[in-house]
Structures are given as structure tokens and as C-alpha cells.
Length: 283
Image 1 (spheres, helix red, strand yellow):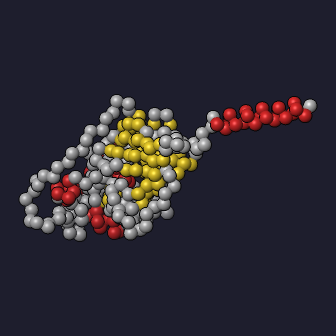
Image 2 (cartoon, rainbow, N blue to C red; image 1 turned 120 degrees about the vertical axis):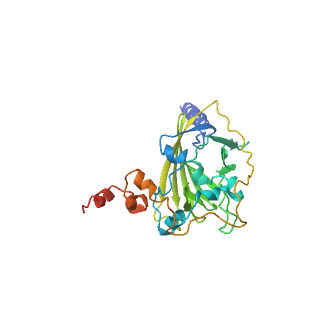
Image 3 (cartoon, helix red, strand yellow; image 1 turned 45 degrees about the vertical axis):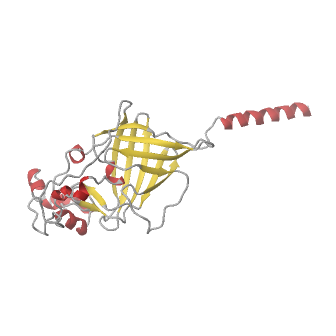
């Protein structure tokens, strides 16, 4: 009887080892592949570009509003602007396709990093190997510094060390003190990105937006050989801009869409349903 019980215990232990060996040590979803953007959200903003003076849905403060009001689209003709990439927080909203590749540890066979690349971007590495973020004084880049951790099947990414960029491509700024949190969620052939921008300089509360992509097995991202062209004859050192209060385009957007000018100016107070009561004169 003793030997029979011992054999049963050994058999159960062997079965347990086999079962554990068949279960991945870490739940890792594979995000690698060619992803095509789907413009179900904000197509006018993402492809042709936002209208001047459109700050709807943005929790911006007066400093951001001033920067946007004095911005001129002609600034993009400057040599230093013509080939600059979109930064990590904005590129998700661009019109470009996306390629994600992965690095795998040859011993543990765990994913140690993802690489994300768009048409108008730099190679962005997202580290999953537990490394810390660099100190505050380290260089800031367009892609920033990204680390990630698994939360079930969702990948949560933290991005720091971003160069100054923009929240919306009509002059609304995002400072180099901002941080970015991302949630990568895959359901079959669909990829949803939830990004949360926290900016102590230009935002009064975190700014949340989502973007959807669909797997496209025939997709290839073309190269981006950008060359600078001097299209405008202007004095050296001149940066296109408007002085405060002189931009004639700011009222065109609300007038065209029959919106209150106050609403078009953005701000957290204009983003929630109770603001409609204020517009209608109710308390």
C-alpha cells in the first residue's frame, strides 16, 4: 500500500510538472505586424488636418491658448520644421500606417522590447526588460523613453523625456515636461491604443484619446527620405507667427460650424455635458 501511494504521488507530481511546462510563465500578447489606421474617429483632424482655432475637446489652459492663437501654419515651411517627425504622443493620431516588431530573448524566449515605426516617425523602442527611466536631465527626443509592463493581456506603457510637441496640429502645444501613458489592447486583428497625456504646463487635467488599427498583411511602409526645400524668401531668423490678438482666422471655425466662440476656445469646462446647460442659460 505504501509503494502504491508513493507511485500515485510521483505520478501526480509528474503530471503537475507537465501541465506547468505547457503554461507560459508570462502572459504576453504579440502586437507585432503591419497595422493600417482606421479613421472612425476624428478623420478631418487626422488626415486633412484640424481647422485653425479649433480647440474643442482639449483641456488646455490660457498659456496653451496663447501659443495656439499666435501660431502660423507658415512655420512649417522653415527648414527645421520640414522634416521633423511627429512625436510619440501625436503619431498615433497621424494618417500613417504602423509597423510593430519585437525583440525576443533567445534563452527565456520572452518578449523584451517592441519597436513601433510609422511613415513620419523615428524608430520607437518600448522596453519590457525592467530597466529604469533615465534621470530628468537626460536628452529628450521625438520618441521619448518608453517602458512597459503587462496587465493581463494589456500592455501598459509609460513614456517620458519627450521633446516639446503638439496636442493638435494647429498650434496647440504640448510641453517637454509632459508624460504619456498608453494602453495597447489587441482583439484578434484589431489594435486599440488608449493614450493619456499629462502636461503640467499646458493642460489642466489629463487628456485621453483612443486610436484603432486593423491588421493588414499586404501593407508595406514606404521609406521617408525627406529633403529640405526653401520655398519662401524671408529674412534670416524670421519665424512666422501672429502677435496676440491679430490672428484673423480664429473666428472662422466657430462661425462656419455655428458654434459659440467660447466653446471653440477649449478648456476642461467645455468638455462635459453640463456645459450645454451653461450655454442654454440653465443652472
